[in-house]
Image 1 (cartoon, one colour):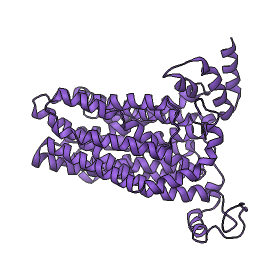
Image 2: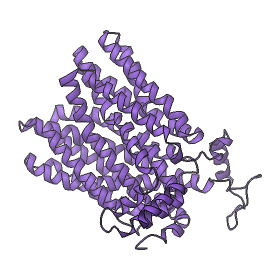
Image 3: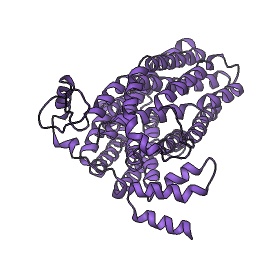
Image 4: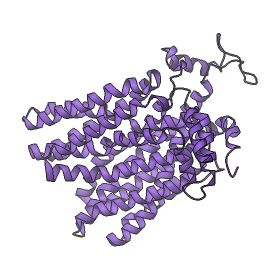
Length: 477
């Protein structure tokens, strides 16, 4: 009865009070699932989380569905791959801009027209293929679809960041989102392949559009958990130019509140966090770009490796083991309260991930590969979680969606570029060299991050005082 009363009180409380009530409600549930019970005890949290999963399904379905649709309709795999790559690059170019717009005007104002535009572009692509329209129409619809694919992943993380700001349970919520990403990349490609090959070539992309519309509209309708729009994010149209001027002048200027203990006397609102984000982005984005290239190289090389052994159908099982390992590691990682900073944790998990990938080229058969790939996958989700956590800590007020969209963009560009290079490597040298290319991409990603660790760690330590008061309330601290 007490738990019911506290849960009812949480429904009437704000986000911060709801998080505190969640900790009390779940306090008696020991074990791995306790942190997840705490975050999902926050009122209406599960609703936007599930809606976000549905809304992001196209990210694992649209590209493959486009290839299957166009190749079936025209018989040209080169054209199909080119249209798919154009869609990926369109999404990479527009995702940060959409994130910035979302931060300025609100999630629901952007999400509804964007998801409807995506659905229309899918309908146009299907019509163009069925009517044997000129190839340029394929590129137009494919690029429009990629550019307007809703970014419900960063938006869902932004909601968690607003609900659990400064809480040690924020990385638990980010673990949920990373596991959701893995779920999408396990279910999505399998579903779109079955639909396109067994039902109709257009069924895969149509299903992706339906997921997009249903999930995005449900997500946008949940206004109570939507992060508030911070007036500063859109009150000054030239905010980035002004901010650069503030940083060059050491924070001196007129009309800004005075901050004690800072050289120069005054700093504009959010300048500290903006400066920290500027320090971290040049390190994290290129590192995630090479991680994206590594991921797609592993996928394609695994298909080629399984084909070489005469068991092409087992490639999906092996890649499923990789995703399962990532989900396992993510759930364990999110259930713990960590004392070490996220920058150091990411250095460790990224290094372990790359070390595992560098061993794939030497695997003797699919059975051994499945075991090794599962174990290596266990540090992928923790790496991604730490990266998103770092950027969330350092993003300027009211711009967390844009900041996290940059990491998604880095992965998308890496996937687009890595898939092209990996194809040539596999054709010329075979799957083991494809794995070697994946390992090389991972090594470059790790070197970029480790060389820039001082910048990232310095920016994180500057953010630490804002979090320490909340962290002191966490169990184990």
